[in-house]
Image (cartoon, rainbow, N blue to C red; front, side):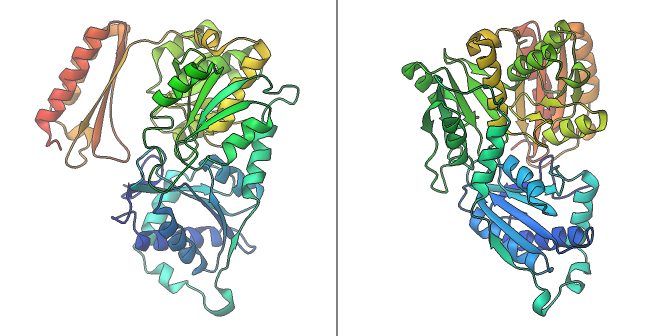
Length: 452
């Protein structure tokens, strides 16, 4: 049972366990120890971050821990999470570290880890890292003298990623004539994202590009598209693109200001890939949270949807295991495996723009391919984490309500991987019916557990 790692790394309130400099330094040592012993040459670990104030202290602590184990550090500064995955492989580093709490507010922070191949670490490696944190092994293995590691700053890291991202866009196309509103959430993409879209020819109206250490995700970005919607409508833009704090997810709005979520983007891109025979096995991989409408449209197109548990890492694991090349989450984590190993908001937006430019159709028309079934999500916050199986009577109630709902919908109850929260999701044809079911389940959980 992992104590620190959730579904997407370690996350919490900065300067409170586990997001402290002590833990970060020891984590750096554990990562260095594992990857130092995996490969024979002088190992290197690449570190990137978002724009949170606390990234400075955690970056220095991680670098100190890594160097103390005789491993060199490559510092790239504020960069989106997918850029770290790309640069880790491109620069032949042994591992990549991202300091970010993604879409969370600035006072939180997190640490995500990538292996040398650009993929997030499997559960077993994360479990091994946790074992080392409480083991005397690290203290015994620390080198001295000339064997201590060094830290280098990579000044051209942003340019390398910008070139890579642009190369994923079809060479025969440009973004000339398109007006785009781009919201970078005052986060890690604030420099690279505008450059990518502008250099491909788009007129870009930029918002969320003035980070100050405390305004990341503050009423902006993928979780708060309202400002972007207004600016799109006011300026007659062709679309809006909202990235989250670390740039691994994207939500877009059409020319009318309507939100187009990850499920709709998957439907649009899957149709294009099926028609051009580029979707492996005509299969899209998504999580249990994706709308039933995506499943229906794929079936109509002659494709199919494979579902995984929540978390883009599990989408990627299934894609790798079965040879699928496209998948993602409703929240906007979209993985185009032909180009990159993890969710990439900039890259996903470029693939969507390529479909728009090829078809010469507005986004609102493309998005109409999918009908969204009503979906209710209720979050029940607890005082501490409680396993679902320990909530008395929940399984029986869920089974009873699922039988009542039948083929007209579905029920999903899951525990958050990062917070003491139980998430209740009900989806179906009738809004009133699924609302009543969701509230009944949430009320039962509240009665059986201590809620915050």
